[in-house]
Length: 192
Image (cartoon, rainbow, N blue to C red; front, side, top):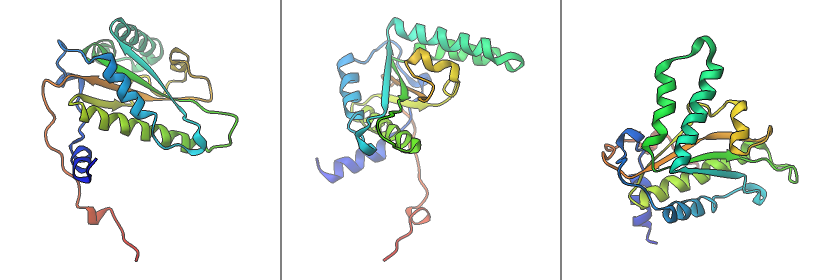
């Protein structure tokens, strides 16, 4: 791979939200498998490979939508908002695939938890770059039920594990607009 191609890939990466997806076209499962294979090549301390991905597609999207909207409804109490409930119920159905992003802790190696979280974040960046390379749209959300302990078991996660969000993938109907970044000089310090 040429550095120029990688530079273009990294700089073209954008979040594409479900409202921008073409709901009439699905992504082939083989492409999702390739994207997840790329994710598993992320760096990780002690080779713990702490990521655990649960992929929802087809009828699975409805199962996820039902689970998360009902969990929200049951736990929101006085903070319940119909608009939030409806979003949790309908938004997953706009995606071709949704990947629940889990972080599994290992007891066999004393790796600090933050390093496992960082490894999973690196895996998600590989997902982002792969989605971009395939010309698809996607975004990582940590909203909804992400940080609810009661949601973990649905995704095969134990008490010590973490649910770190959901990655929505779909065919792009409405591309994201161009993005900007602060000048590099404002974020980088050189020590020579």
